Image 1 (cartoon, rainbow, N blue to C red):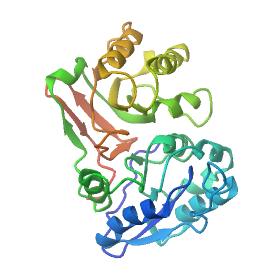
Image 2: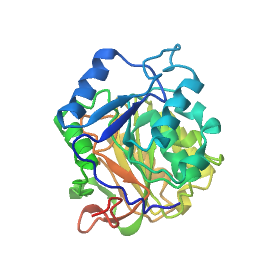
Image 3: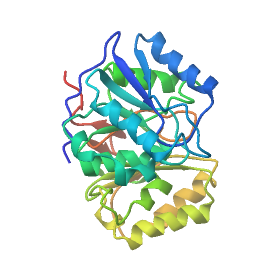
Image 4: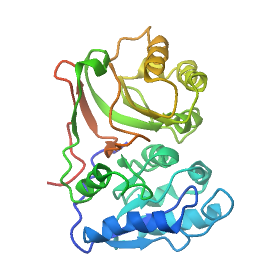
Length: 301
């Protein structure tokens, strides 16, 4: 996987494609998010099929692939933001022309069901992508919009600190941050769309999952021999799931045979704060200094 993307920062007038690879959305929610980008000076370019709806999908698989492919291959488009998660991104993976994507990396932002595309783009096209807010809901919390705009402008530091109470197991490690939504991630184990997680700082988050279902997903990671290879686990927000203390205890039970560091409560996922973090570049996690910091920026300085 090529993590050195060398993205250039966007400036006034830069074109940002808005695509809907998963579920449909309300026009009002779309407009609120799009207005954030317009106010920052960006030209908003929605996919031709983005406003279609087919049940729980934003149009047919072909519609959604067409919009994604056009956004990637159009030289006028400088970044891509997913409008919504929900369900449907995983259906696209066998039909995406990843070979043509390989030479056309662009900042690609989204989360939740978009995890399927983050992992597929890493594995099949060598892309660095950005786990962060989808367009819908981006304006709901000022910090979400600021995080997205800082990434597009190339100003993001990708540096986080945390408190001693967030350290579930100490350690210092360097490695690529990979992962995303735990429910989606586990569905790709055993497929060609899962990148190599050896040495990875595995970022996981989820929403509205009972404790026993999260346990089943962690058990899947163990049975698939993923856990022994990891460099660390980074726990984001588990919104509307079980109590955080119960989730942490369950996860620590699953990783008790290993010695990599584990940190909880990081600002990634379905909670109020959802900072943008690059997936692919190397990071340093140091629980003594209590820092998670990028080592190689994906942007050209």
